[in-house]
Amino acid sequence: MTIILVTGGNRGIGNAIVQAVGTRVRDVTILVGCRSLERAEELKGLGVPAKLEPLEITITDDASIRAAVQIVETKYGKLDVLINNAGSVSLPKSDDLTELRENWAQGFDCLVTSQVLVTKAFLPLLRKAEWGRVIMISSARGSLSRNKSIEMPPTQHWVYNCSKAALNLVTIEFRNAEFREVANEMDRITFWAASPGHCKTAFNNFRGFKDPLEGAEVTARLLESRRFEIPSGTFWEFEQGNFQQVPW
Image (cartoon, rainbow, N blue to C red; front, side, top):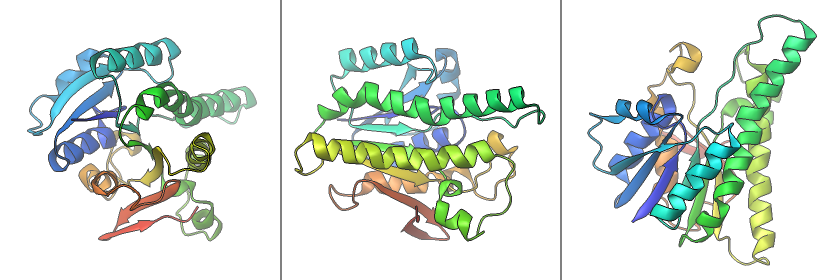
């Protein structure tokens, strides 16, 4: 049985990932990470064939992270896949320096620091899996190449863009650290970054042009891949029918 944890799995892209993976990947139990067990009620009626289990976890709360790790360790003894999806950011209310500093600090704490801490906390359980995998839900907005070439339309969320660029580097750093940890042997844990694309979610007031299930396609394809088929430390998307790498 493959044990998969999707943080922020009860809403938006995370919920779509639960549906896509739970429908297409066989013999899995999906731990649906949410900030309160009451929110797990939203999972009813999805019609997903996989076994779904709610797991209370607030990624910005260290005690909550530790408690979630303990639950997974006690109940399952391992974690095969960690999908770091949870995260939020808000627009600054003004150009006041204090407000801007707080806005940036909160954004990076949620979208970068918390992703690092959740991953580090679950690493021991990922190492107990036959093939541990970590997928960082990033964004093509974090691609330096695309932003430099002005491929992207203007954005109001500078914090979001910059945090996703940082998360991409975090993905590479985790991959490099794991490679060194095993003394240059084949990776025990594979690390990927994935961009769902511009999806219709509450984050953008449903102004995206893709359905969240379309955005979940990239994650499903990564998890359907065979071991060593897709290199660790790479960045992927599924756009206009193409499953392809995103330039850093």
